[in-house]
Image (cartoon, rainbow, N blue to C red; front, side, top):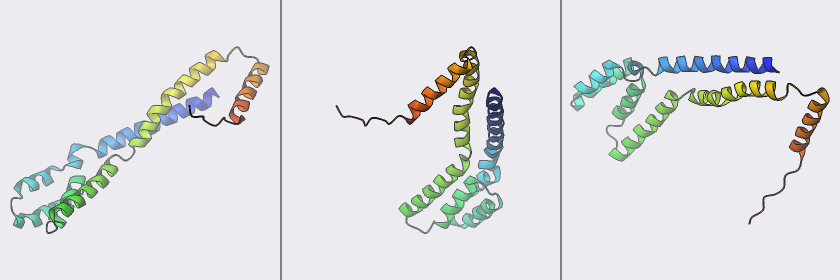
Length: 154
């Protein structure tokens, strides 16, 4: 049993480390906000500069570039609809940027419990005989299969 828990602990640690490294590389400042796009935004002063900004955004695939392309595509729309389009795209980009963070949250919740369970199981039940273990397992099984009482309102 301990071997399985150790394997799970090593596996969750490895997966967690892989996600941390991948997200760290993917979320570098220069990947999310490329300097060339920042420079193009700063130099974009008039409507005639928009095609240049669009070209730069298409050349550098990044969250900022995709947001700016949506904004450029909706320049002739009413302001409220343009804002909605950019906000929708921004939500999509945030989802892409947060990819894998749920896995890290789960690992952060599970890993300490795995380590704790190894220590507790080893120390708590080391002195139990086979009969006592069987009795304990029977009680746990009975408790799990016991019908639950409906909640009563007071």
